Length: 269
Image (cartoon, rainbow, N blue to C red; front, side):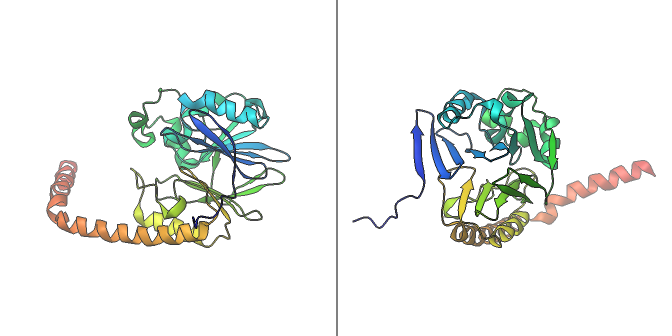
């Protein structure tokens, strides 16, 4: 006999490329089967939003899932982008002109300057199409949907620009790549930092979350356990990188850089 608990989440639709899952009343996960990140639909009493939208190539399948719950793109008031990676934001340009697009100010800057390195364009082979950000978010902002109230938390680590959305009343934690089920971390990319990651996870640990809605993988109804494991792993990762840094003999590696700086200063004398 299996000791696995039955899932509290309901699968509504499964097609070749993606699955539509109900996470909570009026909250839906679109889980793609390729490298695209999960997309989330939140149907509020006053406003309807999406949190991340996946790759541009998945847009037709995203529309199929939205249609299944009676939503068209015209009904979406805002698309919130968790950070700048294209597996999360690639399809955002399809919503321009009819929907507000929001992101943390650091992500907005990278996206609007079309910073291909930060956005991982080559990794995902996405078209070089501009994505305009209408609303630049900060920690402490609130997205009020009527029956949902999503607080914006600045949670850097995976990148410098990550945000997490949290509905305190319902315990819904939209953590993108900062935290995943089983305590999996999304990795540290480019502008990210392990130390920032740890601080962000500690911030999430202090929230009374009940459902984890992450950037990849399944939904989780054990977010407190997930974040505990992630904090433990992140401290281990920090220790491992310290050993690696020592092994590389940082002094000898940085000396040529410092010499270059000294040489430049001499030119200014």
